[in-house]
Amino acid sequence: MIFEYTGISLLKRLTNLKNHITMKKIILVFAIILTTTAMSHAQYFGGGSLGFNASGGKVDFGDVETDMDSQSSFRFNPKGGIIHSEDLWLGLELNVSVSRETQAGEPEVINTSTGFGFAPFVRYYALEMGKFSLFGQGQLGLDFISSKSETGGTTTNSPNTTRIGLNVFPGISYQLSEMLALEATINAFNFSAYRSVQKQDNGDKAITNSIGFGAGLDNLATTGALTIGATVKF
Image (tube, rainbow, N blue to C red; front, top):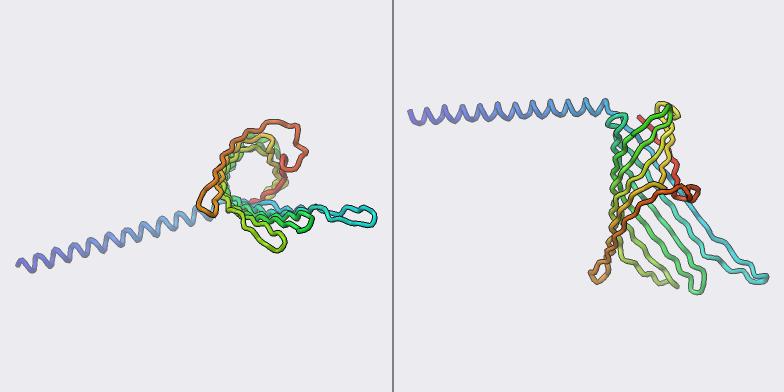
């Protein structure tokens, strides 16, 4: 009787465990269906910027021509995310940059730098006036920068730098169509805080902290103060 009772009890436990696992599977499948359905109705956006700059030249002293210092830079900043609501957007921006500086002379010095980073951001549309909308954006960025210098065929690697920062700034958007909008971010009004860590070869670290606040319209015509781009909804 004891063996029979134990067997029946064990059978009941196995049955209950099977029902419990089955119920968990049903709940998991139901949650996946709900998530998939919710995501299928979500609206997304994408955009970004692409830029290239180069400068250089020669100096002519009659019979002698001398090369000037030259600089070139390339940057690529794609971004995208989800439109949580008409007022609240959540996104991620990637930062890719390459720069090269050549210092003329004997020997010639070539400095190169590459950077990669990403910045999750939150954008809130506070005011809408017809096709114009005013928004504020806050983003937390993390960048990794490496650089090196080449002099007369000898290459010297500089310490790698890791930078993390918080940046808050306003912007304005103009709706061209239901899917496409032009936008401009105004860095003349901004708050930023950065922490940069540079690792030396001997294990030491050089840490730099900076904080800044900008407010003014005097330098809107300068490069970097006013950035114009576009976003696409899909």
